[in-house]
Length: 293
Image 1 (cartoon, rainbow, N blue to C red):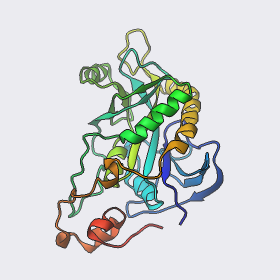
Image 2 (image 1 turned 90 degrees about the horizontal axis):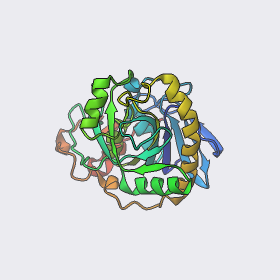
Image 3 (image 1 turned 60 degrees about the vertical axis):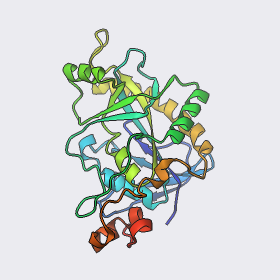
């Protein structure tokens, strides 16, 4: 099977990555179902890259219904070691303006009922998640954004809400009081699952609005989000083209060994089925077979 070390997960407005050549489209299945859409492999700036539209072509899948486990597992099966995730967010700070880019370094989880771990049904793992975004990959994105001439904010707290509805004013003010800087719907469970899969994960966010807290700006609407996304996506594509060639081949960040010493379950109690389904993640620690096609 073809491989790629780097993946781009495109959010709303970014359903394909222009500039890729030698394109191959892969339709994969995993022990956790099918990914959001076919994964496109191709060369971008001389680097083999996998591209996956998070919501599927035509934006068919709600944030609450995303097959995130299948998405991350499928990318892992292609040899992906780094994921750059792109998505829209609302700003919770005056100084973070619509059309700015933000590369967050922290998360608050306000999602409900999403399947956010590979480790269930008789196997438990506790991965460290104090730093939810890869600092190395985030720095590369920040430097690329500067080169691209974008207005970019390095660091910030991303609050992941359930959606698909936008915030109430009370919620928006609450998130501000907690110290959140931006609000979105899709960084989780992606970031948690990527960490469990020992994949570096960084987020490139496009600010489309001021959510609904700002007294001098109208509340967020779908029309507003997509109108600003059309402007912001071009800047994001430019950042991606500059960032990807600068990603080093070797990894020395903690993301690469996140599962080391994290699996709490004794191997003798892990079922053969769990070992088979999770071989891609845990095989080097407890052994097992693989299952992806």
